[in-house]
Image (cartoon, rainbow, N blue to C red; front, side, top):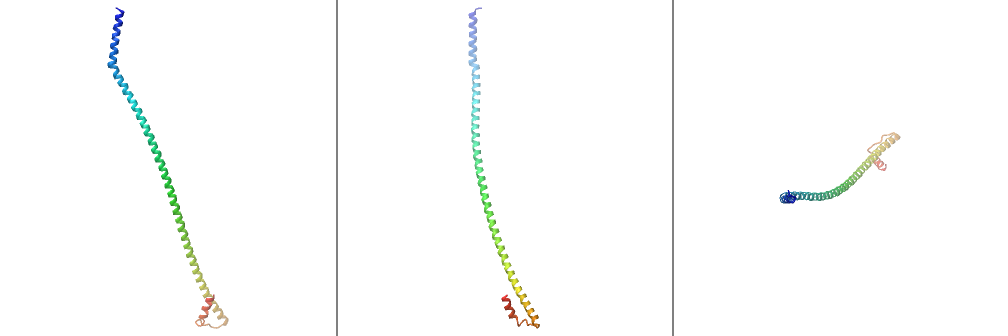
Length: 156
């Protein structure tokens, strides 16, 4: 065996193997690697897009929360203002009712005072007549002295 022929045969077999590998093995491997790279790139892009959407959603949520807080505080302020107005109205109504009740009570008291004075005048006149009757020890005609009794009532 010749060493040169063996080397030449091995070289030819190697070149055939290299050609076969480059023609039939590498293209599917390269295509698989390219597909895998594309899937990874698509996944990374989708992740970035998802992250951007998440950030946008978080910003919208923060804005909505801020708006809700502002509206809530405004509603609370409005409710407090309405409550204060209602409380003031109730106070005014209560004060007016108290003044009315006090005025009615004073008017009733005045009427009772006038009635009591009239009653006392009548009682005093009757007592005066009885006293005068006992002092004089004679009968007094009530019809004859009615005018004197009315004058006495008016003076008292």
